[in-house]
Image (cartoon, rainbow, N blue to C red; front, side):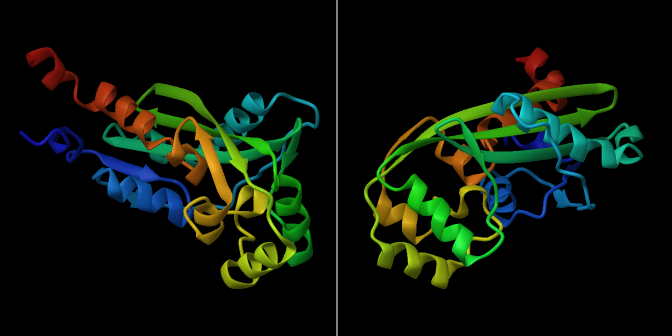
Length: 204
């Protein structure tokens, strides 16, 4: 029996334009479609990182209130942040800011948090995952090459772990690799299974 068959009757919507999240959902074999709407991404300074990511993914889910009314629909929203020495590092505005961000992460360990908000019928599940990522010392040439070649301006912390800089620069990860990519897909799968495969679970 295919364990993904119980997902097929449902309209699973990934409310994200991130190509990394799309790739992770596809690799996990989860049937879904993309729906994107402009959403606010504001939070108060000084609040804990966990509260930031869970608040932001809830803000994104609020833009899909109509879709959430459909009984066969599941909405998935997510947000990822990088935290270095207690400071949240957002997406860079340009190459100069990306260079400064990666230079800060060089030769140090930082945190990555991803919050996920899922809605199905009247149910809401909000959770997060946390990983630690360590970089070896990076040269200015390596950082500049990466930025010029990969243009990581849509990424928190100005880098993608699955890209060149991840292969040559990262010395260790504690926690989920996929969380660092932008979605703890193992937790998403577990929640979908709990909600949508209840009959199969009871039968077993």
